Amino acid sequence: MITSYEIFVPMLMGSGASLRTGLKVKQLGCSRVLVVYDKGLKDAGIADTIVENINNAGVETVIFDKVLPDPPDTMVEEGAVLAREAGIDGIVAVGGGSSMDTAKGINVLINNEPPIMKYFGVQKNLKKGVPMVFIPTTSGTGSEVTNMCVISCTSRGNKDSVVSSVCVASLAVIDPDLTMGLPPKMTAATGIDALAHAVESITGSQANPLSDALARDAIRTIAKWLPVAYRDGSNEEAREQMILASTFAGMAFTNGLVHLGHSIGHTLGAHFHIPHGIACGIALPEVIQYTSKTEWKKVRMICECLGTDVPDDASPDEIGAAAKTALRSLIKSVGIPNLKDLGVSLEDALKAAPAVTADAGFAMVPYRITAARVAELLKSAYDA
Image (tube, rainbow, N blue to C red; front, side, top):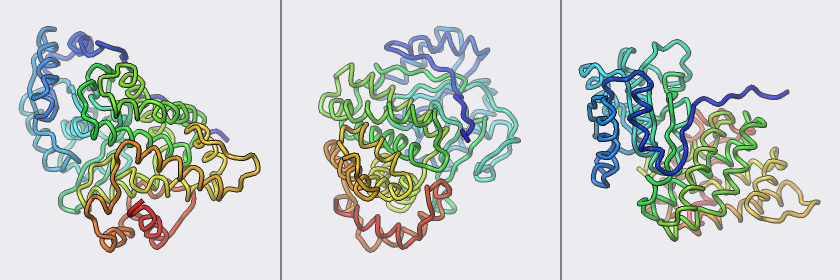
């Protein structure tokens, strides 16, 4: 039986697409919008250009530039207070996943009482928010085309998600020009996040024909173009291909969902403050090797997309080992550090294993494993 699936977000794609932001915001019926970004985007000149474009279309702007990595619930709630007091009727988020997750959280709280943690999980009865336009400036999170936001809960010390139509953008503006200045480390971290979205969605329990097709294309593209973008950030074709791959991977995991790799990533990020893309990549090769026990046909697809030849008579274990080697090679080629490099002790890393099994994404694993087995995966990845 084919699992149901859908595409959520209309997209405007191509070089210079962001120059039509103001026109598109006005067409959505907005007259005063909250523009959400972090201070780094202002320093880069990107935020001011977008704000000016919106103003030139006759739409007022209210600025929220306090976005932090791994958006804390308290910061999201502060932004929601500003949005309500300013009487905004639209939101424009510019930046990476943190900006878009912040905007989504604010939208949830515009017409629903705080705190945001009340709405963690799948929500079908939230009051509607306002139209949102998302403009990614990295090639990794895919948040511009997903129906969820990931928020750091400061009182619990973990991350959780709101999954709702209120988190869906009215329009995603995909402009590769905005990624041209992305530094190598950020290029690598966000690119590996996109890779994790693709390989997890193709091997998880909710995989379907749409997510598989999108994921395969994303994996092929990332394998070819991420090393190029990492080495030469001014390569226009690499930047265009990577932002397309990121969007396709986001669409894939919105339908197929992610699983153990992201559960590990969320846990490592919350416990050790490791950037999300790096945290998701640390044990990704071990995670995909683990999935080969039941999903060896899908793991063979991953090998093919990575350009790795696997004999026709290879066993599931051999297929998993081949995928592990290929993924590790790609991850290392763009300088992603391991836990040892990051200064995390092996003892502390292994202690985090039980928290991995408590992450919401763990429910999507291909087959159940124990915290002890998760610890084995972390041990294998520790200094790989």
